Length: 158
Image 1: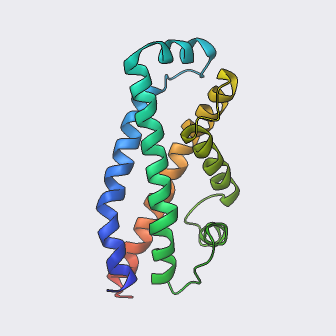
Image 2: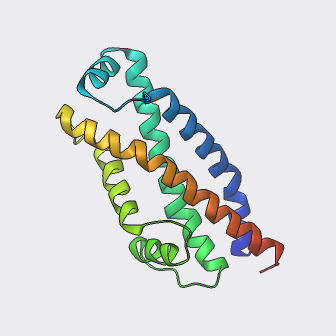
């Protein structure tokens, strides 16, 4: 099976992940800036903890699927070299599929902090959540650009 065909198998999953991430993000984060009062209220309710856990899971899953599975296949389908994760992100930036590879490394760091619960300090948790909140749009935007490029590849039967 060609890489372009394998991409099409991952696309429904990424569409679902993007929609779920956007939904939980809109329900979790207030329109205003995040602060200690918001975080305290969120963590004081089981529903708030569930929403936070759902966001973190979806945020991590979409990153893993997009950068770990889809991006290498897209590079292969484009006849670009596939390398380490950092190399792949740098190449994706040069190809304008994502805006800033360094931002993706920061996104990965925020992901790791949130997943592994390194954030026992509420100020650190607020900082990581604030970053993750901003990263959602970048993650979904990169997905859309990569998907559009893959669609063009299939239409041109590459």
